[in-house]
Length: 435
Ligand code: URA
Image (cartoon, rainbow, N blue to C red; front, side):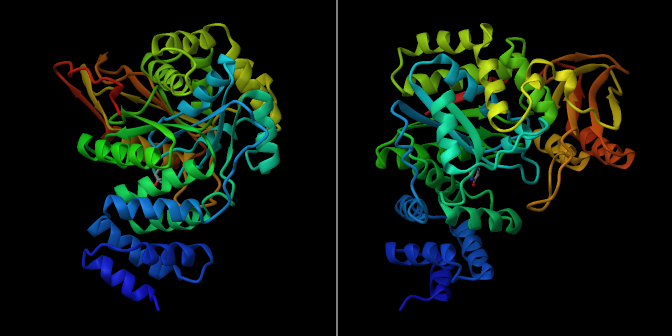
């Protein structure tokens, strides 16, 4: 008879687990028969000892089968899913979903997204910063919005990969989030369960992500692509830079507003480039056209306003007021605004994504515990980016918070995040590799 104690010690000794042992673990996670402390001990053993590719594949399959699989049967076109491994200032899904839908090429993007935790932001919190929007919708509503608009962004159904829900919650509080086989199984189990034929992964690399080095990001990307291929899903992974925050805004309403600017065709250049690349890869994976044509199709949706209209329609379907999307002055303003200014003249050589993420979190944009309320207006707007010239006394960033105390704490983190040097740094591309 299998015992959780034996499975934990086997992994602790660095030995390979078999299918029965992994299936026993996942079943116990799902039906709650294994307590949190044994799950946490197992996760920590995996963190130290790793998993072979075979073990990771079995874990992914068991997690996928731990709940329902969503075939979205009433949708006849190609379904493509997109997932980011999480970063700071990452509002790409809010832009790419509308772009893919606006391309109107029979490609659907049903995107189940998550909330922020710790230093990384969450797409759902950003979307819900628009008054009235609720992303907690039924599976039927999710399917109906996807069919009608061509995309939907909403909360993860508790019925899809429930084992991941419990494991992720424990990983977040036990220091086991940054573990390649666990990330791969977490991401891919949800993607496989959600029933999309093609999967485009945005694997973040740098201080503001779980993969700090290119070696780790590449290992994770290759592993997920191989899992996707074994499960007969067309899977592409882009490795993208997360050493500094993506775009200018980090927070919730500030990021939704920045997403709107990109959809209006006047957004930050690096962010726009990444969104066009991700959208083009989605259209290309769905066999819409050759890659260059997919880039042109994606670009067009930003410049003709059609992608912006799609976001407005989603906001309306989720209970919000679409006027916010066309007039961002309607968004609530924060109580306190503070400015970080440059102490000396020079070039911005570093804006550390992790420190900026922590700054946004202490300002009130993130939560330290699951379920905590966030301040939708809290966040940071960067006036300068890595490589920019700055003069002493010039504004580097604006911070928004509810209270002066929060603004002061955020300022301490943000101050640590920025380095000004005498020489301009080497240019860092946004898309580092495609796998
Ligand atoms: N995103 C996920 O869904 N899971 C992880 O473990 C990391 C990022």
